[in-house]
Length: 138
Image 1: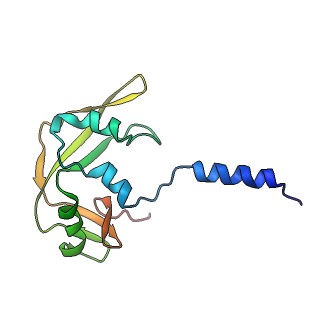
Image 2 (image 1 turned 180 degrees about the horizontal axis):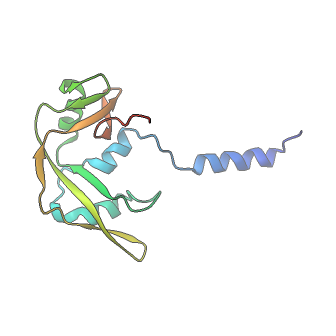
Image 3 (image 1 turned 180 degrees about the vertical axis):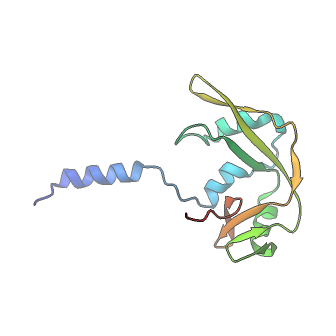
């Protein structure tokens, strides 16, 4: 069976354009780090950061209202098992909850009860890559 060069090129183009589902630190920052965000900014921040660009409207997205250095510190000094770490300090977080879809836009409820809580992060290479505990298969 002979594979044509144009077929290989087409496959490479398709593969590089598919979204990746593994997350790195840059994606984590885009989805969860918002130092100056206010509770009423959910829809605007999610739209501006294009958090829903690869799929349906996320039901909930949590933003940590802190500087990057403070959040990275959780991976260094937090209590953990080598991959998942719980912060020693408390962070201000805003939970954005999906409300409705209007035209082609996801609308989120304002967080009327922002909270101060310890956070749990999944870390790789000393930086956070997921908000919340690691998901286990099964």
